[in-house]
Length: 402
Image (cartoon, rainbow, N blue to C red; front, side):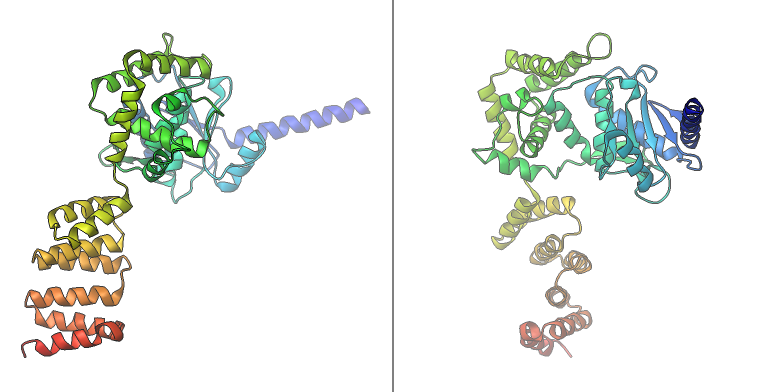
């Protein structure tokens, strides 16, 4: 009787496993990826194109073996967030708030687990920093079992801003990183700053991740953008060393970290590198720094510099009303009234104060002798904030030609 119950239970398990396997039986191979999807879910070709496009952008930096037959990457797509939560919880004991790369000792078992967070089934339903980070980790670990922490975290942060354009089939990476402000603040904090040697020497657990991640990004960005040959050569040599002769590096993290640190030390002086790194970081301007510099330039009559800084700030946050408003003020000061109107109206659309922008538009139209338009804007300003603009608007309205 006991044997019969045991056989029945085992059979039930087998049936359950078979059913789960059948629900996720669709596998499509494309480029470097094997994409596994549940029944009824058909990812569009744009998803595979985007994944492979990002892979190409990673490899354009690292230059690892591009043979897709030697380093297959598995991507498992779940139908929705609920399925994702159940799948991840079963494997790691809890779910995650974002996509996750599940790394196993046998790299062929590792997988990137996704679910569509937007509409549709194409690349756009998955795109964003979360995908970029996990996709890069999967790429890196397919070649290196335990990469140095600064390479893992620094390039993870660097590729966050990568954007795949399906029209041009190219990846672009924004020059501005959201990690810049944190990196500059940490670099200015004597208690938390990490010098070049400390970043290159870090291993798991040796530094607080919250302060290490931005500083790893800043060193990575510095090395990538440096025009000095010794830093460019160091990166290239590091990647060659990490890949290894047979295409997969299974050394320990400590060994890999020390090998790369020693390589840097052989041809570079750490004190000089710290100085170069500091100069580079100080030359990178945050959004707030650009806005402050632009406003100060305008107030000081330095309109060319003001426009340059404000346009740079607008490139970072195009929907910021203060930036658009001050760009309007700069154009007005230079008597380019049509351009001033464009910036003012953009500021208004982005949420700027209605009375302030209408007042500015009224002045611009008045200076350009568009009196009919000016009357409308000045009346709007007066009605929106009579205590501030009532008397001033009235004075200009009374001075207009009849």
